[in-house]
Length: 173
Image (cartoon, rainbow, N blue to C red; front, top):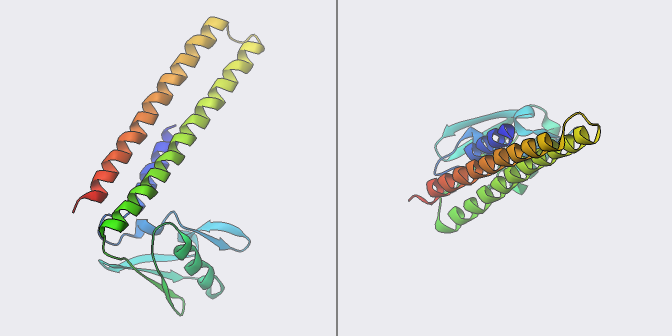
């Protein structure tokens, strides 16, 4: 469950709040060599100026796939290719863009909630198996199931808190 929170933190770092950040492109996955790879494994991301991100793609054959991956990400960016260098201008945050970013943040938060619930489901399945195999008693099963539910509730609450603080950060003028 902590892993889901950490993944959410990393994704939220990528959501910009007004200026370019190399972390903005970290969640982008590129179709390279027959599989999806993180953008950081196909090129170097840099921020030469506050409103521009550049990606220096190492393999010339991956330039088009990288540009397509950036364009099709839900970040609202429009990259331009210059040889093996991809320039990604970061648009100013207008009200519509802020709304779009809050929707993306909400989507990331929902993915984190699903991940937490999947961990809960796996834990409950293990408890059922242990009870069935007579490794634990019914009372212990019930006690441990309640503990798993408490952990799930606290992690879901943390996800919601992270989402509300990120939304407030995005909506600041």
